[in-house]
Image (tube, rainbow, N blue to C red):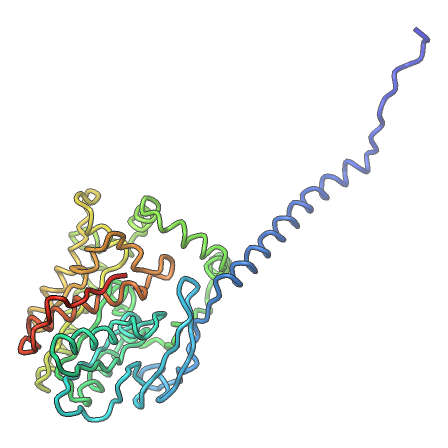
Length: 382
Protein backbone atom coordinates (compact mmCIF):
# COMPACT_ATOMS: atom_id res chain seq x y z
CA UNK A 1 0.00 0.00 0.00
CA UNK A 2 1.34 3.43 -0.84
CA UNK A 3 -0.82 5.19 1.75
CA UNK A 4 -2.70 7.24 -0.82
CA UNK A 5 -6.46 7.57 -0.35
CA UNK A 6 -8.86 6.32 -3.10
CA UNK A 7 -10.01 8.89 -5.61
CA UNK A 8 -13.56 10.15 -5.28
CA UNK A 9 -15.76 11.69 -7.94
CA UNK A 10 -17.11 15.04 -6.97
CA UNK A 11 -20.55 15.90 -8.36
CA UNK A 12 -21.22 19.56 -8.50
CA UNK A 13 -24.45 20.41 -6.69
CA UNK A 14 -25.44 22.80 -9.48
CA UNK A 15 -25.46 20.01 -12.09
CA UNK A 16 -27.85 17.87 -10.06
CA UNK A 17 -30.20 20.76 -9.46
CA UNK A 18 -30.17 21.57 -13.18
CA UNK A 19 -31.08 17.98 -14.06
CA UNK A 20 -34.17 18.21 -11.87
CA UNK A 21 -35.79 20.60 -14.34
CA UNK A 22 -33.79 19.99 -17.51
CA UNK A 23 -34.60 16.30 -17.94
CA UNK A 24 -38.38 16.72 -17.49
CA UNK A 25 -38.24 19.69 -19.85
CA UNK A 26 -36.48 17.60 -22.49
CA UNK A 27 -39.06 14.84 -22.04
CA UNK A 28 -41.91 17.31 -22.33
CA UNK A 29 -40.39 18.92 -25.42
CA UNK A 30 -39.90 15.48 -27.02
CA UNK A 31 -43.51 14.53 -26.26
CA UNK A 32 -44.75 17.82 -27.65
CA UNK A 33 -42.68 17.39 -30.81
CA UNK A 34 -43.98 13.85 -31.35
CA UNK A 35 -47.55 15.05 -30.78
CA UNK A 36 -47.17 17.88 -33.30
CA UNK A 37 -45.61 15.50 -35.83
CA UNK A 38 -48.40 12.96 -35.33
CA UNK A 39 -51.07 15.63 -35.69
CA UNK A 40 -49.46 17.14 -38.78
CA UNK A 41 -48.94 13.73 -40.35
CA UNK A 42 -52.52 12.57 -39.83
CA UNK A 43 -53.88 15.84 -41.22
CA UNK A 44 -51.83 15.29 -44.36
CA UNK A 45 -52.76 11.63 -44.78
CA UNK A 46 -56.40 12.01 -43.69
CA UNK A 47 -57.52 15.55 -44.68
CA UNK A 48 -60.97 16.82 -43.80
CA UNK A 49 -63.32 19.52 -45.08
CA UNK A 50 -66.72 19.51 -43.40
CA UNK A 51 -67.74 23.13 -43.95
CA UNK A 52 -70.26 23.38 -46.81
CA UNK A 53 -69.67 26.49 -48.89
CA UNK A 54 -73.16 26.15 -50.41
CA UNK A 55 -74.91 26.77 -47.09
CA UNK A 56 -76.44 30.18 -46.46
CA UNK A 57 -78.31 31.57 -43.43
CA UNK A 58 -82.08 31.19 -43.42
CA UNK A 59 -84.44 32.82 -40.93
CA UNK A 60 -86.80 29.84 -40.73
CA UNK A 61 -84.54 26.81 -41.06
CA UNK A 62 -81.32 28.26 -39.67
CA UNK A 63 -79.64 27.58 -43.01
CA UNK A 64 -80.44 26.21 -46.44
CA UNK A 65 -78.42 25.35 -49.52
CA UNK A 66 -77.85 27.81 -52.35
CA UNK A 67 -79.65 26.83 -55.59
CA UNK A 68 -77.46 25.63 -58.47
CA UNK A 69 -74.42 25.54 -56.20
CA UNK A 70 -71.53 23.07 -56.00
CA UNK A 71 -69.31 22.46 -52.98
CA UNK A 72 -66.51 20.05 -52.13
CA UNK A 73 -66.33 18.23 -48.80
CA UNK A 74 -64.58 15.35 -47.07
CA UNK A 75 -64.60 13.41 -43.83
CA UNK A 76 -61.21 12.30 -42.56
CA UNK A 77 -62.67 8.79 -42.64
CA UNK A 78 -64.07 9.07 -46.17
CA UNK A 79 -63.37 10.23 -49.74
CA UNK A 80 -63.51 13.69 -51.28
CA UNK A 81 -66.90 14.34 -52.86
CA UNK A 82 -69.00 17.12 -54.34
CA UNK A 83 -72.45 18.40 -53.49
CA UNK A 84 -74.49 19.57 -56.49
CA UNK A 85 -77.74 21.35 -55.64
CA UNK A 86 -80.61 21.82 -58.08
CA UNK A 87 -82.61 24.98 -58.67
CA UNK A 88 -84.39 24.65 -55.32
CA UNK A 89 -81.23 23.98 -53.32
CA UNK A 90 -81.93 20.24 -52.96
CA UNK A 91 -79.18 17.67 -53.30
CA UNK A 92 -80.89 15.90 -56.18
CA UNK A 93 -79.87 15.09 -59.73
CA UNK A 94 -83.30 15.95 -61.13
CA UNK A 95 -84.69 19.50 -61.32
CA UNK A 96 -87.44 20.53 -58.92
CA UNK A 97 -89.69 21.68 -61.76
CA UNK A 98 -93.17 20.14 -62.17
CA UNK A 99 -93.10 16.36 -62.34
CA UNK A 100 -92.68 15.15 -65.93
CA UNK A 101 -95.41 12.90 -67.31
CA UNK A 102 -94.80 9.25 -66.51
CA UNK A 103 -92.41 10.04 -63.65
CA UNK A 104 -92.99 9.21 -59.99
CA UNK A 105 -91.58 11.61 -57.42
CA UNK A 106 -90.57 10.97 -53.82
CA UNK A 107 -89.70 13.82 -51.46
CA UNK A 108 -87.24 12.91 -48.70
CA UNK A 109 -86.94 14.87 -45.47
CA UNK A 110 -84.85 14.37 -42.37
CA UNK A 111 -81.44 15.30 -41.02
CA UNK A 112 -77.88 14.41 -42.02
CA UNK A 113 -78.45 10.77 -43.03
CA UNK A 114 -81.25 11.88 -45.35
CA UNK A 115 -78.99 14.58 -46.78
CA UNK A 116 -76.26 12.03 -47.51
CA UNK A 117 -73.81 13.98 -45.36
CA UNK A 118 -70.16 13.00 -46.05
CA UNK A 119 -71.19 10.58 -48.81
CA UNK A 120 -70.67 11.00 -52.60
CA UNK A 121 -74.02 11.65 -54.26
CA UNK A 122 -74.19 8.42 -56.33
CA UNK A 123 -73.98 6.43 -53.07
CA UNK A 124 -76.58 8.42 -51.09
CA UNK A 125 -79.95 7.03 -50.07
CA UNK A 126 -81.70 9.54 -52.34
CA UNK A 127 -79.70 8.70 -55.46
CA UNK A 128 -79.81 4.93 -54.94
CA UNK A 129 -83.52 4.95 -54.07
CA UNK A 130 -84.31 6.73 -57.33
CA UNK A 131 -82.10 4.31 -59.25
CA UNK A 132 -83.51 1.17 -57.59
CA UNK A 133 -87.14 2.18 -57.98
CA UNK A 134 -86.66 3.30 -61.59
CA UNK A 135 -85.34 -0.16 -62.36
CA UNK A 136 -88.17 -1.85 -60.48
CA UNK A 137 -90.84 0.27 -62.10
CA UNK A 138 -89.43 0.30 -65.60
CA UNK A 139 -90.14 4.04 -65.56
CA UNK A 140 -88.45 7.13 -64.09
CA UNK A 141 -88.62 7.63 -60.32
CA UNK A 142 -86.92 10.70 -58.87
CA UNK A 143 -86.10 11.71 -55.29
CA UNK A 144 -86.14 15.35 -54.28
CA UNK A 145 -83.84 15.46 -51.23
CA UNK A 146 -84.84 18.12 -48.69
CA UNK A 147 -82.67 16.63 -45.93
CA UNK A 148 -80.09 18.61 -43.99
CA UNK A 149 -78.08 18.35 -40.80
CA UNK A 150 -80.15 19.49 -37.82
CA UNK A 151 -83.44 19.52 -39.75
CA UNK A 152 -85.23 17.30 -37.23
CA UNK A 153 -85.22 19.87 -34.43
CA UNK A 154 -87.96 22.28 -33.48
CA UNK A 155 -90.43 23.27 -36.19
CA UNK A 156 -88.12 22.32 -39.06
CA UNK A 157 -89.65 18.91 -39.92
CA UNK A 158 -93.05 20.50 -40.48
CA UNK A 159 -91.51 23.32 -42.53
CA UNK A 160 -89.70 20.82 -44.71
CA UNK A 161 -92.85 18.75 -45.13
CA UNK A 162 -94.80 21.81 -46.23
CA UNK A 163 -92.09 22.60 -48.78
CA UNK A 164 -92.00 18.96 -49.90
CA UNK A 165 -95.75 18.93 -50.52
CA UNK A 166 -95.45 21.86 -52.94
CA UNK A 167 -93.43 19.52 -55.17
CA UNK A 168 -96.52 17.31 -55.63
CA UNK A 169 -94.76 14.07 -54.70
CA UNK A 170 -96.27 10.60 -54.83
CA UNK A 171 -94.93 10.03 -51.33
CA UNK A 172 -92.83 11.65 -48.59
CA UNK A 173 -90.18 9.69 -46.69
CA UNK A 174 -88.82 10.84 -43.33
CA UNK A 175 -85.42 9.28 -42.57
CA UNK A 176 -85.06 8.83 -38.81
CA UNK A 177 -82.14 7.72 -36.63
CA UNK A 178 -81.59 7.18 -32.87
CA UNK A 179 -79.45 10.34 -32.86
CA UNK A 180 -82.41 12.38 -34.13
CA UNK A 181 -84.34 11.30 -31.05
CA UNK A 182 -81.40 11.65 -28.70
CA UNK A 183 -80.72 15.27 -29.62
CA UNK A 184 -82.86 16.77 -32.40
CA UNK A 185 -86.29 16.10 -30.95
CA UNK A 186 -85.20 17.52 -27.59
CA UNK A 187 -83.97 20.77 -29.14
CA UNK A 188 -86.59 23.38 -29.87
CA UNK A 189 -85.51 26.54 -31.69
CA UNK A 190 -81.73 26.66 -31.32
CA UNK A 191 -79.62 28.52 -33.86
CA UNK A 192 -78.25 26.10 -36.43
CA UNK A 193 -75.29 26.17 -38.77
CA UNK A 194 -74.46 23.31 -41.15
CA UNK A 195 -71.87 22.16 -38.60
CA UNK A 196 -74.32 22.28 -35.71
CA UNK A 197 -74.82 24.67 -32.79
CA UNK A 198 -71.78 26.54 -31.48
CA UNK A 199 -71.21 26.29 -27.74
CA UNK A 200 -69.44 29.22 -26.07
CA UNK A 201 -70.04 28.45 -22.40
CA UNK A 202 -67.65 25.52 -21.96
CA UNK A 203 -65.36 25.44 -18.96
CA UNK A 204 -61.69 24.50 -19.01
CA UNK A 205 -62.41 20.78 -18.94
CA UNK A 206 -64.97 21.14 -21.72
CA UNK A 207 -62.55 23.12 -23.89
CA UNK A 208 -59.84 20.52 -23.37
CA UNK A 209 -62.32 17.83 -24.39
CA UNK A 210 -63.18 19.77 -27.57
CA UNK A 211 -59.49 20.17 -28.39
CA UNK A 212 -58.95 16.44 -27.93
CA UNK A 213 -62.04 15.67 -30.00
CA UNK A 214 -60.77 17.90 -32.82
CA UNK A 215 -57.36 16.26 -32.83
CA UNK A 216 -56.96 14.38 -36.11
CA UNK A 217 -54.40 12.01 -34.60
CA UNK A 218 -56.74 11.12 -31.74
CA UNK A 219 -59.63 10.73 -34.17
CA UNK A 220 -57.80 8.32 -36.45
CA UNK A 221 -56.53 6.35 -33.48
CA UNK A 222 -60.17 5.93 -32.45
CA UNK A 223 -61.12 5.06 -36.02
CA UNK A 224 -58.86 2.03 -36.12
CA UNK A 225 -59.47 1.05 -32.49
CA UNK A 226 -63.26 1.20 -32.84
CA UNK A 227 -63.17 -1.31 -35.69
CA UNK A 228 -62.73 -3.90 -32.95
CA UNK A 229 -66.26 -4.54 -31.68
CA UNK A 230 -64.83 -6.06 -28.49
CA UNK A 231 -63.61 -2.53 -27.74
CA UNK A 232 -66.38 -0.44 -29.27
CA UNK A 233 -69.53 -2.18 -28.01
CA UNK A 234 -68.68 -2.08 -24.27
CA UNK A 235 -67.72 1.59 -24.59
CA UNK A 236 -70.99 2.44 -26.32
CA UNK A 237 -73.16 0.42 -23.93
CA UNK A 238 -71.59 2.33 -21.02
CA UNK A 239 -72.40 5.68 -22.64
CA UNK A 240 -75.28 6.33 -20.23
CA UNK A 241 -78.37 8.04 -21.62
CA UNK A 242 -77.02 7.89 -25.18
CA UNK A 243 -77.34 4.08 -25.19
CA UNK A 244 -80.35 3.66 -22.89
CA UNK A 245 -82.70 3.13 -25.84
CA UNK A 246 -81.13 -0.33 -26.12
CA UNK A 247 -82.35 -1.35 -22.64
CA UNK A 248 -86.13 -1.54 -22.25
CA UNK A 249 -88.15 -0.56 -20.39
CA UNK A 250 -87.21 2.91 -21.58
CA UNK A 251 -85.89 5.43 -19.09
CA UNK A 252 -87.94 8.61 -18.45
CA UNK A 253 -85.79 10.69 -20.87
CA UNK A 254 -86.34 8.17 -23.66
CA UNK A 255 -90.03 7.93 -22.85
CA UNK A 256 -90.18 11.71 -23.24
CA UNK A 257 -88.39 11.48 -26.59
CA UNK A 258 -90.90 8.94 -27.85
CA UNK A 259 -93.78 11.06 -26.54
CA UNK A 260 -92.46 14.02 -28.52
CA UNK A 261 -92.04 11.83 -31.58
CA UNK A 262 -95.66 10.72 -31.24
CA UNK A 263 -96.76 14.35 -31.04
CA UNK A 264 -94.58 15.46 -33.95
CA UNK A 265 -95.53 12.55 -36.15
CA UNK A 266 -99.18 13.33 -35.48
CA UNK A 267 -98.66 16.84 -36.85
CA UNK A 268 -96.76 15.59 -39.89
CA UNK A 269 -99.25 12.85 -40.70
CA UNK A 270 -102.24 15.18 -40.36
CA UNK A 271 -100.70 17.58 -42.84
CA UNK A 272 -99.64 14.84 -45.28
CA UNK A 273 -103.04 13.11 -45.12
CA UNK A 274 -104.81 16.41 -45.70
CA UNK A 275 -102.74 16.81 -48.88
CA UNK A 276 -103.50 13.22 -49.91
CA UNK A 277 -99.81 12.25 -49.89
CA UNK A 278 -98.60 9.04 -48.18
CA UNK A 279 -95.98 9.55 -45.46
CA UNK A 280 -93.46 6.90 -44.38
CA UNK A 281 -90.63 6.64 -41.86
CA UNK A 282 -87.38 4.96 -42.86
CA UNK A 283 -85.50 4.01 -39.69
CA UNK A 284 -81.70 3.81 -39.91
CA UNK A 285 -80.05 2.15 -36.87
CA UNK A 286 -76.94 3.30 -35.06
CA UNK A 287 -73.77 1.24 -35.59
CA UNK A 288 -73.72 -0.49 -32.17
CA UNK A 289 -77.47 -1.14 -32.42
CA UNK A 290 -77.03 -2.81 -35.81
CA UNK A 291 -74.12 -4.97 -34.67
CA UNK A 292 -76.11 -6.09 -31.62
CA UNK A 293 -78.97 -7.08 -33.94
CA UNK A 294 -76.67 -9.61 -35.56
CA UNK A 295 -75.73 -11.29 -32.29
CA UNK A 296 -77.54 -14.47 -31.25
CA UNK A 297 -77.22 -13.54 -27.57
CA UNK A 298 -76.89 -9.78 -26.91
CA UNK A 299 -75.75 -8.74 -23.42
CA UNK A 300 -78.28 -9.24 -20.63
CA UNK A 301 -80.95 -6.55 -20.63
CA UNK A 302 -80.07 -5.30 -24.13
CA UNK A 303 -82.81 -5.40 -26.75
CA UNK A 304 -81.51 -3.76 -29.98
CA UNK A 305 -84.93 -3.95 -31.68
CA UNK A 306 -86.72 -2.06 -28.89
CA UNK A 307 -86.48 1.40 -30.46
CA UNK A 308 -87.59 0.52 -34.01
CA UNK A 309 -90.45 -1.53 -32.54
CA UNK A 310 -91.57 1.49 -30.49
CA UNK A 311 -91.30 3.82 -33.51
CA UNK A 312 -93.20 1.34 -35.69
CA UNK A 313 -96.04 1.31 -33.16
CA UNK A 314 -96.18 5.12 -33.15
CA UNK A 315 -96.20 5.20 -36.95
CA UNK A 316 -99.06 2.70 -37.07
CA UNK A 317 -101.17 4.86 -34.74
CA UNK A 318 -100.87 7.73 -37.22
CA UNK A 319 -101.35 5.65 -40.37
CA UNK A 320 -97.74 6.29 -41.38
CA UNK A 321 -95.70 3.67 -43.22
CA UNK A 322 -92.62 2.25 -41.53
CA UNK A 323 -89.54 0.54 -42.94
CA UNK A 324 -86.65 -0.64 -40.79
CA UNK A 325 -83.55 -0.48 -43.01
CA UNK A 326 -81.68 -2.80 -40.66
CA UNK A 327 -83.42 -5.73 -42.39
CA UNK A 328 -80.86 -5.35 -45.20
CA UNK A 329 -78.02 -3.67 -43.30
CA UNK A 330 -77.71 -6.48 -40.76
CA UNK A 331 -77.28 -9.14 -43.45
CA UNK A 332 -73.77 -7.91 -44.22
CA UNK A 333 -70.74 -9.84 -42.98
CA UNK A 334 -69.21 -6.83 -41.20
CA UNK A 335 -72.05 -4.37 -40.57
CA UNK A 336 -69.82 -2.08 -38.52
CA UNK A 337 -67.89 -1.25 -41.71
CA UNK A 338 -71.03 0.42 -43.10
CA UNK A 339 -70.41 3.43 -40.83
CA UNK A 340 -67.73 6.02 -40.24
CA UNK A 341 -66.35 4.59 -37.00
CA UNK A 342 -65.80 7.89 -35.18
CA UNK A 343 -68.17 10.26 -36.97
CA UNK A 344 -71.01 7.72 -36.69
CA UNK A 345 -72.79 8.51 -39.96
CA UNK A 346 -73.76 5.77 -42.39
CA UNK A 347 -71.03 5.75 -45.04
CA UNK A 348 -71.07 5.33 -48.80
CA UNK A 349 -71.01 1.57 -48.22
CA UNK A 350 -74.09 1.64 -45.98
CA UNK A 351 -76.38 4.18 -47.63
CA UNK A 352 -76.97 2.10 -50.81
CA UNK A 353 -78.11 -0.81 -48.61
CA UNK A 354 -80.51 1.41 -46.68
CA UNK A 355 -81.88 2.64 -50.02
CA UNK A 356 -82.33 -0.95 -51.16
CA UNK A 357 -84.45 -1.66 -48.09
CA UNK A 358 -86.63 1.39 -48.71
CA UNK A 359 -87.01 0.47 -52.39
CA UNK A 360 -88.20 -3.02 -51.46
CA UNK A 361 -90.78 -1.50 -49.12
CA UNK A 362 -92.10 0.79 -51.86
CA UNK A 363 -92.11 -2.07 -54.34
CA UNK A 364 -94.23 -4.19 -52.01
CA UNK A 365 -96.63 -1.38 -51.16
CA UNK A 366 -97.10 2.11 -52.58
CA UNK A 367 -95.37 1.27 -55.87
CA UNK A 368 -96.58 -2.32 -56.11
CA UNK A 369 -98.13 -1.56 -59.50
CA UNK A 370 -94.61 -1.07 -60.85
CA UNK A 371 -93.19 -3.65 -63.20
CA UNK A 372 -91.57 -6.37 -61.09
CA UNK A 373 -87.81 -6.24 -60.94
CA UNK A 374 -86.04 -8.93 -62.97
CA UNK A 375 -84.64 -11.89 -61.08
CA UNK A 376 -81.13 -10.81 -62.02
CA UNK A 377 -81.51 -7.41 -60.34
CA UNK A 378 -78.13 -6.55 -58.81
CA UNK A 379 -77.99 -6.21 -55.05
CA UNK A 380 -76.29 -3.19 -53.51
CA UNK A 381 -73.17 -4.44 -51.74
CA UNK A 382 -70.47 -2.48 -49.94
